[in-house]
Each structure stands twice: as C-alpha cells, then as structure tokens.
Image 1: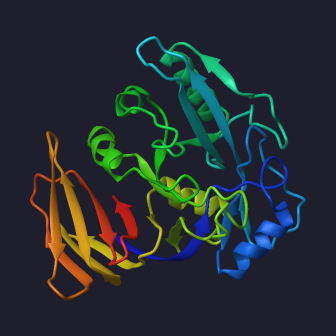
Image 2: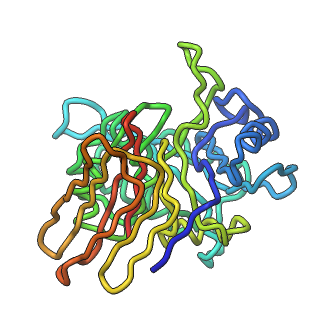
Image 3: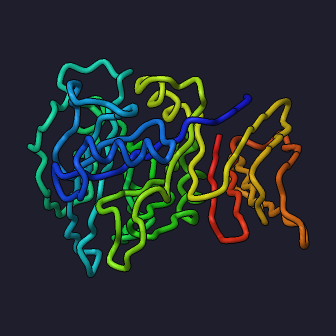
Length: 303
C-alpha cells in the first residue's frame, strides 16, 4: 500500500440553514481561500443534498443528528451527535432528501434505540460518524457496545476535544473504524475573538477529484486526519512502513495484533523527525500512527 495525500477538506460545518454564521455560498469562499478542496455541509437535523447550489469547491452531502439517552445506569443524560455523509456507493431507494428534517432531537431510555437510529441512517445511504465523543462525554463502554457506525471524530476543534485514547480501545475491537479531524465550524470568531475555522481537517489522495471519489477514499481509509502536522507519503511494503512527514517531535506508532496492541514511541533529543522506517512483525494485523509536533498538534493515520 502506498499513500500520497494532497487534497484537504473539512467534513463537519454549519451554515445559516441552522445555527451557523455563514451561508452555504459564503462558507465555501472562506474555505477555498484557505486552499481547501472539499467541504461537507452538516447542519443540525436538516439534511443537505442540494445539487443546484453554486459551488466554489466540492460539496459533500450530510447532516448532524443528535439524540439523548436517559439510562438508569448513568447519573447524567448521554448526548449522542451522529454526523452523516452521503455514501454514493450504497444503492438504496429511501435516501434522505434535501432539507429533510424529520429526525428531530430524539429521546431514548435504551441503548438499543440509539442503535436503531444508527442502523436507520446507515440503511438510508449514509456513513455515520460519532461526533465529538468527549464533549459532551460519551462513556467508552457505550461506544464499544454500539455497532454499525463507521467512525469517530478523534479531534473536534469546536469542542476542543482529543479522543486519541478512545482510538486505541475502539480500533482494537474494529479495525475498519475511521478516525476524522474536523472544525465543526459555526462562527468565524469564537467568544474570545479567535478564528473558529481551519483547525481540524482531513487530507485525501490527490486522485479523489469529485465528491464520490472523496467519500470512497474516506471509506477505504486513504486519508489522514490532522490539526497541524502534514503527512507527505506513507508506504507499507513487505511489512515495512516508510513515512515522510512535516517536522514533528514525536511519533507514536501503535501496532495491533489479534489479542493486544503495543505503542512504540519515536523521539530524537533536540532533533525533529521528518522520516520513519519501521519493520512490522508478522503478528501485526493493523496499525495506527500519531505524529505530534512541538506545539502538541497532531496528525492521525491508520490502515
């Protein structure tokens, strides 16, 4: 497997269709000016699948749904946010239509009901990603119990959350999971006057030239997630991993086998890392890697 990545995008943002500050047209111009190639419109509870809107970059279709679990085992209500992206490869007859807002805030007392919602969204032709699982907090045991979702947001800039620790436990169970980094952008400036956009993103292969190919690249994990560091190339050949990246101070490589996982840390005293070679053992089933720069920013990639 060889991976080269150049096409940058944000797959979680909000517009004036719900609680965002910018219109669909305006937010495209902002991201295009920052050299983003694609953007997913994921407003709350109202599905985006508009083909007629003007496009300054590639727009992906989707929505963010929220549901609440009042469960006797927990002192506080568990608030799930489910980010959806339209999967063009799924051949379904009941796709969610543009501006459909039939899924309101849903209140449940059983985890099975949350599972039913995930299954319903998947059956209607969507990828389903658990949004910002650390804020609001979702216990890891609930994420382990749920099935059929496609991934989690390992980083969400709006909530300021990093779910790298969830990555390891969940990936041990399901090596097909996707781990994404997003802005979850609502307003250009937050309450402190800092820019809320352009912090969390994913980068896919440069061969992904339209929305169908971008979603396919995401599904097949031909992307990396980041809030700063860049991964220029990654190749795995005959159990050897070869990485080229921007200057980072630390690389955490987690190698998974059938029964356990082990994390190997690579650091150079007073020297930044821009390349790595590592020989896997034959027991390895899959791996995940985090590149960390000297500001604590991260890039995540997994096979």
